[in-house]
Structures are given as C-alpha cells and as structure tokens.
Image 1 (cartoon, rainbow, N blue to C red):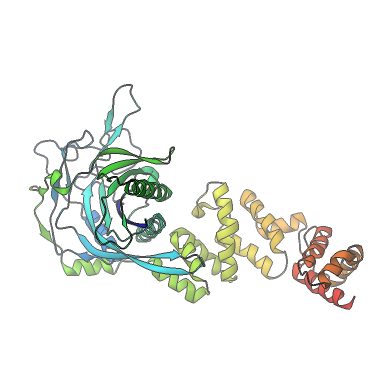
Image 2 (tube, helix red, strand yellow):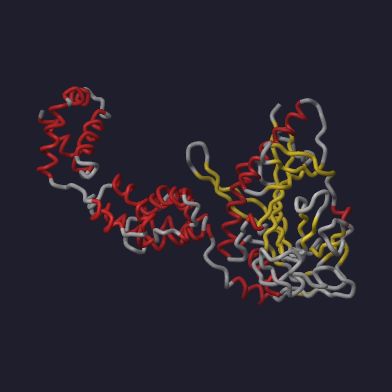
Length: 482
C-alpha cells in the first residue's frame, strides 16, 4: 500500500538579547551553574516579571520576515506543568494571542534532473516564551543537578503548518529558516549552545487521504541532519505498523543518534493538559502599527532577495546563488571577492569547492579564513591572466591557507609560473607525439579521450606548468597535419 507523510516542525530560537525575557539576569553562555539567577527567574513568591522590550522587537522582526500577521493586542499565558527544571511550576508563554501568526516561508527543492522548484510552507505562529533550566544527570552518581541559568532565557517558538511531506523538505525548511534568522541578526543559531532547537511532528496516512494519521513528536534532535534521519526512521516505523494492521500511538519519542532509532518517552500532551490561563502579572497590551512599520524599515536584504540579486548582478545560476546565500557570512565573503574585479562564476566555484573543503578540513569558519576574499581574488586573477593554470592554483591555495602568503609570492618562490612559450611547447609536443603513435591513431579513429593522454604527458614533462589551452591547440594542429 502507498503512504504519504505529513510533517510539522517546532523550532525554538534563542533571541540575542543581553538579558532574560522577564528579568535583568544575563543570558551569557558558560557561566557557573545558577550564577545568572534572581527571584524573578527562580519564581520566588512576590517577584514580578517585566517584559524585555528588545525581545519583543526581535520577535516582531522575525514575524515580518516570515510574512506573518503581527498582532495588535498581546497577552501572555501560564503553561502549567511540573518538572524539576521549571522553578515556578509553570512557563510564561503565549497561547491564543501570539505576537506572530499566519505566515509563510518559501523553500527551494532540487528535483532529480537538477532543476529547482519552490514550495510554500505555512507558519502557524511564532510566539514568545521563556526557557526552562537544564538538568544535569551525569554530574553526580544516582542523582540529578539543576542549573537555572537558562530559566527565563527569551525564546521564539516558530511552529510550521503540517505542509512538509518529506525529511528532505524538513531539512531545507530548517536551512532556509536559519538563514533568515542569521540575516536578521536576531540569533547566532548555535545549536551546540542550545540557541536553536527543533522538535518534529510526523504522521503517515494512505496516499490521497485527507484525514491526518496519528502523529508522534520527536525530541533530542541536535542537528538538521538528525532531524532528517529521525523523520526518515519514524516514517518507516509508522508505515510498517500500518502495513501490519497495527495502530500508531500518539506519543513523544526520543531520537538516539548512535542507534539511528526513535524510542518512546511519554504519551503526548494536549493543550488542555497544560491548563493555560492568562498570566495575571503581565497585563495585555497593544502594539502600535507605527512601531511595526518602524521595525519593518530595519529589515535587511533577506536570503530570497539576495539570491535574485546574485542571479541578476553576477550571472549565477539558481543553485550556485542558493548555496552561497544560505550562509550570510559566505555571501559577504563572495561579494567582497567579486568586488576585486574577478570572474563572478569562477569566484563562486572556488569558494564552494576548494575553499570550503579547506575550511572543513581545518574546522574553520569562513569569517576566520586565513585566505581572505582579496587573497582568493588574487589567486583567481593569476588564473585569468594565464600566469598559472587552474591545476597549479589548487596546489597554491593550501599553501596560502597554511602560510598566509599571497598567491603571487608563492608561485615566485616555487617557480610555478605557467609556461606559455609556444616554441617550447611545440618542441615537447613533437617528442610526445613521436613517442605515442598509438594514442594519435586512436584519436584519429574518433576516440577523443585519447587526446587527454597526450595532454597529460606534456603536463607531466612541464611539471604541470604548461598552459593547458595552448597545449590542446598545438596538439590538435599537429595531429591534423600528421
């Protein structure tokens, strides 16, 4: 039987404020346990929360970028549940009157033929709420410690509509959402520091059915690839249950990265289980339309807009533009490189292939690259003016990375300047052709790849310094005359 999956994602992003959502405690990461706490975030009797205005401004900024309706009237609610990391035994959140609602995000998906198509993913809501503390289970034997430094950290929970239909779409949605958040500079989205977290809801139904299947929620997802793998596993698991005439149970499941499986954690709660009611210590209030418009004017160029500009201004294809723009710092690096008057396409290729491979190897971020945009442009310029070949340039770049020397200095030290002396290449070509009559005959018989062998022999004799284009031209001319 054929099935289809229905996926919705809940993303919690930590907003980049210096203080917590309802108190002046620091949001700095890495402090000693329980150092950044006060009566408000610890829920002491008589303490009163005060909303962080900057957190609200950043939340509205995200809502505008996600094409959301921005509420004119806001209120906060108490989400009640008991857990050791929640000092008040309730979480201040938003229930029926979120700051942002009814938005959408466009994702780009590649098809089997390499083409790109768009899909619109609805955003149900993006609401403000405070974070809980952190439980430490491995610090003491047979016990658990609680660190309340995170209690009260400002979060924006972004809930998608169940419009995603595959793990691959879920991955692209997360990549696109993260790019928007980073372009807005509302968060650094560092998953290792808990500043971006994702829970996934997934159900399976018979193809063509309208009614949704029973969903499960997946937690403990510490990377976008983990989200993709966990969804793929859970879709298989639910499909096998339905095929065997079983019943999928609505529950929360944990992803185990080492085993590549999800495991049952608890039955899934519903909204009524949390006994939401209006937060009595924070009165409802209104947001003026002028305030919203003032925030709108601060929006930067967003990823989708930058993709279109890269295509128009630099002649890049859809895929190249998407890859460069997904990371704001990579896009900035690219533009600085192109400003040095080098080929936009060649700059794109070198950044995406050779530079990114080196950065990955050395576990370095592009903004900290030892080879800056101007340095890379200098290398590309040497290829463009035929001073060195692309092959030699691939040897030069790692040395630039290690030594921070310019490409020009390195090729002078190594004597790697490209050989463009026509007479010298012709002399070498004559020797190679005389020594390889079989390759010449094979080429004349119609097997064009035989020319590659002859080119390779000349490149070997010149230690890779001969101009490949000139070598090809000379060989073709001499073979035609033979």
